[in-house]
Amino acid sequence: MRKLFGTDGVRGVANTYPMTTDIAMQIGRAIAFLVKKQKPDREHNPRIVIGKDTRLSGYMIENALASGICSMGVNVLLVGPLPTPGIAFITTGMRADAGVVISASHNPFQDNGIKIFSKHGFKLPDEEEAIIEDLIFSKKMDSLRPVAEEVGKATRIDDARGRYIVFLKNTFPKRYTLDGIHIVLDCAHGATYGVAPHVFEELGAKVTSIGVKPDGKNINHECGALHPGVMAKVVQEEGADLGIALDGDGDRLIVADEKGTIVDGDQIMAICAAEMIERRKLAQNTLVATVMSNLGLEVAMQRMGGKLIRTQVGDRYVVEEMLRNAYNFGGEQSGHLIFLKHNTTGDGILGALQLLVTMKKKERPLSELTQIMEPFPQVLQNVRTKQKVAVDTIPGFADKITVMEKSLGTTGRILVRPSGTEPVIRVMVEGEDARLIETMACELCDFISKQAGC
Image (cartoon, rainbow, N blue to C red):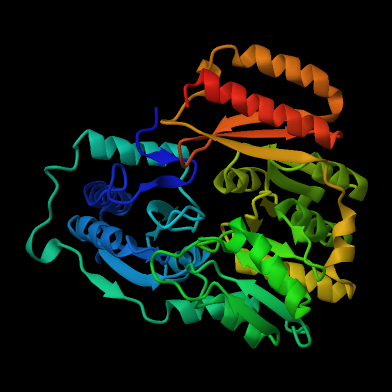
């Protein structure tokens, strides 16, 4: 059983377990311990990058993490507010030994989290997260306390944001510009507020920015990738060519076409995969997605002569599958897009740039490009629980699912899973009959709520 880590690091309400300063300090000590163990004979102290989003509690967690790391004789590089993919980039670019992101991604401001990157810029696998948990709860590090000149120090890196902006612009082919394109950009009052507007403007676009005034408490609040309708409405009002909505830590992307129609991660993947197949740039003609991706994406890939491979939910599992079999493009319906040629994790700004490149090459509006995929009707609903619940322990659950799946036949599916980041059971029903799946989803949520005592 995992004690701290979920599908995307450690996450919870800030200043309550597990997101306390005590646990943050212990996580810092454990990461530092592992880093030193990998290179015990180094002449200089190892270095770990720490970045964060714009949450009020970020200051508190940042100081605790840095203290834990320094107490183990490892140096800290503080980059301040920077998107999660930017911290992965800085970690590898500065040849640091690990990177840590303080963020609860798309969650509300009162939550916070800790994600860890290896020196190669990839999120840690389950096995290494389990080692960190063991180090913390077994108290194996208690006797390991460097003293005097052996303790680490913290240094602030002032140009991290500029480095990341230059990197992003260099992923956009130099023969193209964004001249003449009007973009509505929603940064969710999060970590991209000081990066994304500069990237698109410096490439030539006219940018109408919203969600760029963080106050520590407004991150993701009725804005960004979780609430793309706000951005879509501004697209219509402004007559813009494209709307871009990012989440609080900038690792996911949802867009709107010039008509204000919202386009999710599955549709973006279909558009980009088609263009990569056409140029013979999609490795093994294979796209990696998760079990949440729409059946319409699978049908579209088959029609293009490609293939879709699914993993469990979580962008790091998509990346692990890509690395395991040398695939180069994957992502999630929620908007995590991983272009391994450019970065090691989901990157909302980078994904938007790759979509814009395709639009420039095709010289077609986004509304036309989205026609490459016809989504199946899909209903997503959440059941909030008092604590995390294993769905297979809910009385009568298996029988209920069996009956419903027979009703759907071979052209639909049901997926029920606990969230890896909060006490929520997620229900997805997909099929050809929109009214039927809506009814089934509501019925299933009611059943879970009653049987699980929510």
